[in-house]
Amino acid sequence: MQANKFTTTWINLRESYDMLSRSNLLQNLYKNNKMNLKKVIDLGGGNGSFLRWCHYKNIIYDDFLIVDNDEALLKSFYPRTKSYLSTMSLSLVKDNMMSYRIQSLKKNKDGFITLKKQDLYKSIDIINDYNLVSFSAVSDLLSKKFIKCLFDKIDKGTNLYFSICFDGRVKWKNKNKHDKYIVSMFNQHQKQEKTTGVALGLNSINFIKSLSKKNDYKIYIADSSWSVDSYDNDSRIFQKAYLSTIYKPLKKFELIDQDILEDWLRSKQIDIESKNSNLVVGHKDILIET
Ligand SMILES: C[S@@+](CC[C@H](N)C(=O)[O-])C[C@H]1O[C@@H](n2cnc3c(N)ncnc32)[C@H](O)[C@@H]1O
Image (cartoon, rainbow, N blue to C red):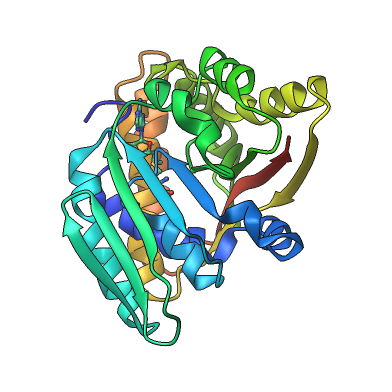
């Protein structure tokens, strides 16, 4: 799998943890003025996890555009979202493969959703047609060049929301003597040539902060870390999948000691199987009022 590719299985697995972890920064912005979320663009939106979270939090928009370059993820938007919305008495009407309407039984106003298969750089051209630009679980993939382009292009009044930004912390309650080494290798490996240039990894958070300050934008930061136990089957499946997201790239990383990696993996697998693995993955939400 390429460094920029995310399987639908992984994206679906992480959704419930992301749902519970996002902070209330965006709800506060919405409560202050509903116009702030009238038109939303979600860049690298995958199969619409952020849109479903907006519904979970009762955030109502008029138009929502999801941009991603992964066709398989965009395709899985409809079945997953239709099924999610049906639990809220909302129906999702498909006008065509890329255009949908949300109809509520109670309200007589439709919400429009459009999907677009497009690269992130290309999408920067249209951000100022929206009130909110969202990046969910995307910040660590971005390069300095991309974030600079974004800040150069954005107009006053178009707000930015980076949610679930990986901050480099991965902590297990049941420690292994190699945790620190593996996590530092993982963070190093993340800063590779990826989808928009050399990815900033955890440093993206400080870079976003510094550009916001330079531009005199108001910036709000809150914790959105995952906290996962291993008592039930779902959490064990999730932890194993997360372990793979660390192990698989490091397996191909020339700088790592492969024996340590294998030993470490085995000990983590044993902890998960014996329901003895409590995991925290550090994330931040960043809201910027331009
Ligand atoms: C970690 S996933 C997050 C997906 C989604 N935002 C979520 O919260 O579930 C990163 C997403 O960025 C997309 N992506 C990465 N590089 C991209 C690019 N150059 N252009 C468009 N989308 C890109 C991937 O296809 C993937 O859907």
